[in-house]
Image (tube, rainbow, N blue to C red; front, side, top):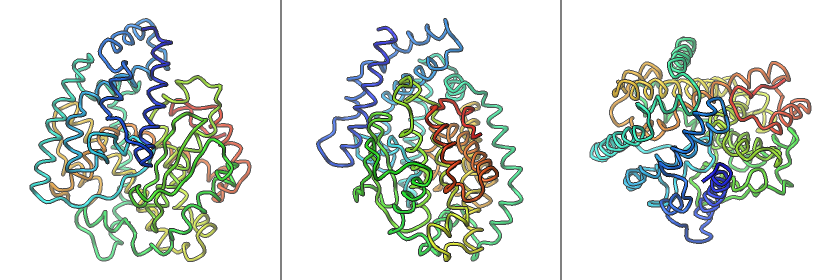
Length: 446
């Protein structure tokens, strides 16, 4: 198979993949099993991997080729780990529909809050994850890499020691500010489950009413030059089958055909999720269809985390809350709460990088010590379920969130706190997205 034929099959696979995932959510028709989708593509195998590796050896600096290699090898790994993921789906939310499609395959900046598991269930989950980890290492070895960290460093083109150092620097730089904010919580929280419950912000639920969720996002994007109510390539619908507060997008074709499903509820989680998804979708809607397929579909996954963080950060702007949600949403206590959520989000992402690097490089990592140091509260064994499923995306998430946070600061400094209503900012975002950045380093606003 030559590269042209491979790319055509990859494009066809992604279109059918997101169409099946969307159909599963909509219950339009029975979905084919996920394993069958991988088999039918006929590209997720070691022969294709070997071909791409030979091409990369001949052109080691070919960025598109490396992204195609990552796409295919990730598919090979996932296909061979399906049995473990399907077993997890019997106990846990890694797969929303047993034996079929993973909810986290849809575009989404967040996942629903988890319930604290009983000890026997946690023991089962931990055992399955350990088996999955061993099989992951075996698959990575078959692909010719020493371990997951070395594989990621190669396909992402980054050095993980530097990424780990960046995470450590962020934790050190924000430690004093974070711990000071943590001490203001009343009543005091002492463990991760209590902190997670506090950060859901039930005391501020009235400030984020469900009825204003869709209008607030539509208004924000409208003043940035994107009218989602008259966008021929976008379908936005309310779907009560989606987990409450979750926002999901299905990019069947980019930019020609994108579907968004939401289940609006009150609360800050839902607003941040919808805003984050708005950033991820806006970028795809504005891609030029004339751009190369690899640049439209196989860009750096960290870009999505950056887009989500950029738009989610609007919730922490008093100007946005006052403008879109009313003056009652603009109070000092709520502002402090929003800032704590931001700090927590990035410090959690940094902790996951620490854990993932150490587990990959040294085969073990002290989960409780790493996360207690980062988040300032105790972590008993049950808290592992809050982080297990996120390890597969830990490196991309932290890289992207860092960039998105910096970009949000730069935009506020350039266009002011009401940047979401500034036509010049909207034009700058249009210019950026229409150019179709494929690497995180391209995400720069003039």
